[in-house]
Length: 362
Ligand code: PMP
Picture 1 (cartoon, rainbow, N blue to C red):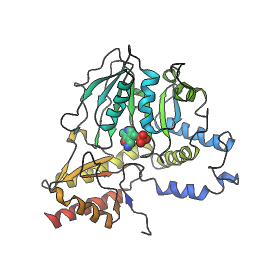
Picture 2: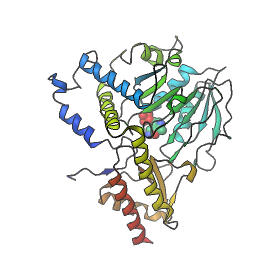
Picture 3: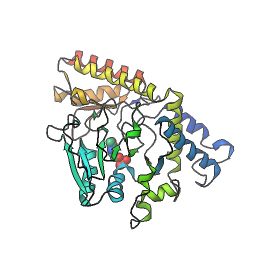
């Protein structure tokens, strides 16, 4: 394979080609330092400029003010599942969780392990084909927070509105939809995302949270498990994953240069509609996993009515340079992840391939 293919992997996932090229260009000599960004101290002004710029750009894109802070942690979003209840929940004020898929379940399980988790709603029965409705949410007014997973990467479902919590702080795992559309980020008290889908490589978690909340970590927690440590030290208490943060910086700049969140939102909606149209007009040849009202714009999940064709579909797609289409083992079928960096042309090519495959196999 000499050319770049269309990469529909769920994460790590496609990054903008311009970003990769820029990183390549700057790799040996970052901004005239004669070193790569990989080799520069995290205390060096050259790195600090990157660190401050990415934080400012993220807050600008999210339209958030000084009451919010951007914090970078490592350990993946999976580690955040444990850090969140450790820092913010207690037996008197448990975290309450809306279960909408595997990752929200995993987050909930960590809170349960600590004896501080309850369930506000669950759509597990029925196979997570949709997200919970507002009416289904039973939010304990005493809860430390309501935790939701905004986009469910495996099931291909997504919230299209922010739930109302009646004053209970709102926490969201936005790993698979962060900065993919204009959103009311200011309604959230704590946002976190493993960046390896819409924003960069694996290795860093972007947290954007109210400063007043981040200050509240219990003093008895080990230093590196306290969000307050990251707040007080500007995410520089220890060596942060500098290269990952740098690439997030380039990607965020790319988002800004390409029209910001409204342009991302429009393009992502258009790409998703193309694929859902093929599914809906296939006379049942393709069957979408998600209920229409909860369809994800980021991960389009579907199966073939003739399951025996699945391997052929995946192989034929790959032969055309359409890679990473196979669904997660727990759901089966197919999943096309079409994050910000996936060009419209890639989705058009997949849609045409799906049409063609149906005609050949009906
Ligand atoms: N939340 C969501 C929505 C995810 O899609 C993923 C990973 N696919 C995770 C959490 C876990 O992230 P990590 O691998 O960074 O721990």
